[in-house]
Amino acid sequence: MRRKTLTARQLRAASYLEQLEMLSRLQLPAVCSKREEIDCILALRSASLLEALTEPPVVLRTGERFIPRAIVTSITPEGRMALLRGRRAMPREIPFNPPR
Image (cartoon, rainbow, N blue to C red; front, top):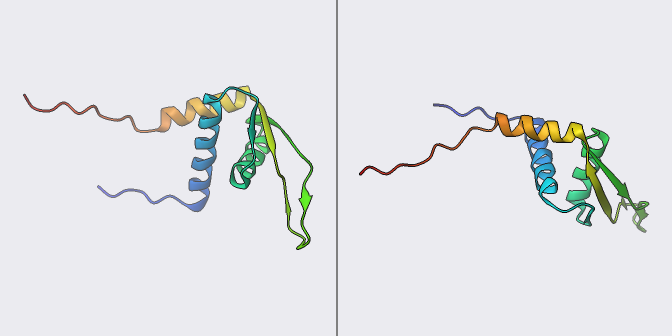
């Protein structure tokens, strides 16, 4: 059976849902300072899947801008529904029963 290859958009959406799942297990508010996590939090916030506060962007001498810290305060009802849909869409693992 051939596996379906995922598009870049589908992989990105899966990584966002994975981050949302991880955040749902943490005690909120949760503080994040890694750039990759903050980018993901900004995307989830823009999709109204969670509520988060961010510090003002820092501008480096090179002109690069980044947000040093984000605080996730809650997961919205829409975010909880997305988690439920994501869990249902995941293939269930088949338990291994060794032969007797």
